[in-house]
Length: 210
Image (cartoon, rainbow, N blue to C red; front, top):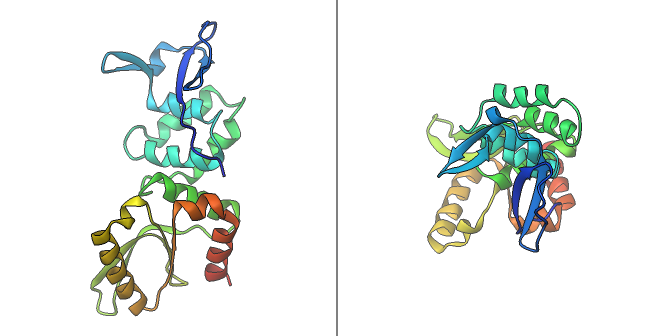
């Protein structure tokens, strides 16, 4: 798994003399006026153009996380498709197509997207995102990150907020309600996803396909 890069990444025009430093990385590309906008007075590339540029440097898992977040309101699927029509080949084009095909604005967080990429890469069935579990009387039990309803299996990613005492207590009570409805609950953290991704996939696969 690709680890987070702490450097600031900046895009500059082709021919710029700036050089990379320990805290920043420059990417040179041709500037297209209609693919730029201004944010707080600074000229930046549009979300769709930024997405296409990132496809050249990010891992597939990280690019899926970006794609999901962009589709949440920064750019439409059609705008991303237009970027691929403008640059149909070259570095990152295949990654961009795959990520766009899998992209889903229902993804709740970037790390959920990374877990979803692991599921896709392993060839496992695609889950239903933000699935709502109800009890036998149709009453709401919980909304979960993603699930395979036909197998009554769900996966949730626990970010740092889940370490807080009040959240942890709520999580346990919520999980008890879910288990009472005969669901299999699998929960993973960043340490799992980055430290033992094969085990994560293996556990999900065993629950989903046996």
